[in-house]
Image 1 (tube, rainbow, N blue to C red):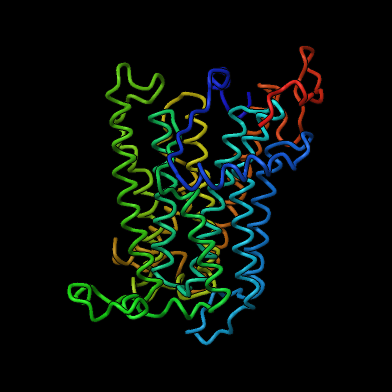
Image 2 (cartoon, rainbow, N blue to C red; image 1 turned 60 degrees about the horizontal axis):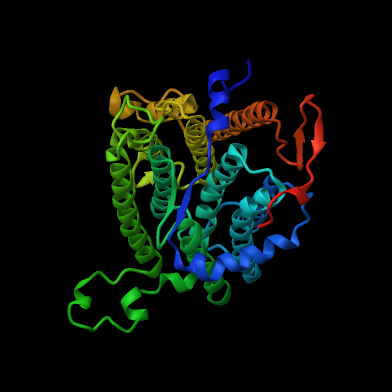
Length: 424
């Protein structure tokens, strides 16, 4: 037996993707472009290969960040700003990621390779991209090592978790009039372009001063925040709206006759938001060591490895949620990958909990070692999950992951003839 039990594998054949995209930008601007762009790809290129290509571009962008700013410092910390072309490359890279992520489904229909594996692979790449782009965007905004970057990570992961939670309970991937995968990405692309022209320092300017509204009645009573902090506030408001709309969609689906046919009835939908809240609280508790305003992790080179480990654990968490969705099984409330973070958070907070010093994180250096070990464990755990899930699904459904091949009635892999399938 592999990673996925046999009864879950059998449910894969009943899965059908359902999506609803209300975005006007997507409908009238981007989708015509995507429909044309997919025709440039040969039909022997697998859709998951296109998705992986997009993620590879983002990983390259992240590598340029590590090369030019390995300590994740900002100009106000006395660090020299990376070359301006780097920010333009991030904008181009993210736009390409969005484009490739959008056309992989069209390519799947062109090649007859559509199925649950494609959705899982697509969501997995999106989950990884979320953390990488959070670090890149926070650097472009000049936030650097700060609780603002942590807040940005929480907000972006929360939006992704909400979308996955909503899809699990409704069976439909909803994208509203303003969504992260469409307008949100274009907004971040615009941030990269502005930073490329003006530098990260531009985001330190106060919002009402920049808009020449600081003397306008009523508006002058609102705090004149820097642009980067104002952007975070607007993001928090957007998160609140997304929570409301997601909840209303789930509530409507649960009240429909019969509800969703295979959703987990052991818990109320709102209860299943708690795993994200709990895992986030763990990370914040760990970051607060030894003091909230004097974090050994945030104020050191361990910050980026910590956020990356957090992102990998999150990708594992939502990956299991998506697996439960496509197999029609129970919601994964607990994820064992949190164990090491539990150890790190509890150890860091022993002075608060038991009035004794930490056993492992007795110094910034030891804390860094624990963070790096957590990153390695998180990477290996997620790599194992991805490898096993891909292997199980490809072998059961007889659909290859990175090539346009299927198994014939004798179990032999054969190339698919795209001519026999509907083109995008």
